[in-house]
Length: 229
Ligand SMILES: *Cc1c(COP(=O)(O)O)cnc(C)c1O
Image (cartoon, rainbow, N blue to C red; front, side, top):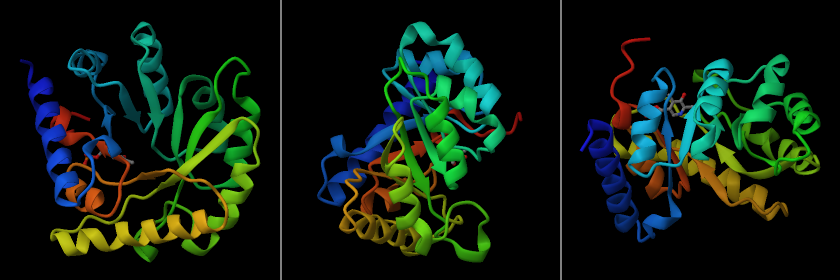
């Protein structure tokens, strides 16, 4: 078995244990393999081990990999910062965007989504770390942004995403994920049918699953340390 295949197996086991500990079914948590900085050969090794969904942070790198693996019918998720002048290739090549934080970017993605593709699945990124983070919309602006995004014809609003500041112990890791889940419940109570909480990375997936993550975004634990980039 390749190293990537055995790492994937270990990550799936971590997700299953975290879900069981939380009284959840492991099928409620989707694994997104974050392949940024890794070559197409690594994506294909993961795909051969059954992995279908891949996350990328950089537009050109992600588009290149989506094109190179087109015949494998993988699902590409854009998870990095997105400037409004780079939306077109994302609208054309990705199935999901997790990192929506401004209405202008959402409007461009909707306008540029090709008519022969299904709607682009999107999550609004929320800043749950306050001053420590510059990414994501403010918690108290999330409902208004979600309402506006939900009205765009070629996007389908699925949920919320966050990247909290790293923390060492489980309780400190869980607090910002709980905060995101509370914002998610507020948006749902506002009438928007969200079903996705994109939260948790290699070092904190257990905390995220305990707080209700439905997608965990895992790079290092699958592909190794990104010390080559
Ligand atoms: C790189 C990245 C990940 C994966 O992080 P690991 O610690 O390598 O698992 C997840 N989400 C986002 C937004 C990232 O940029």
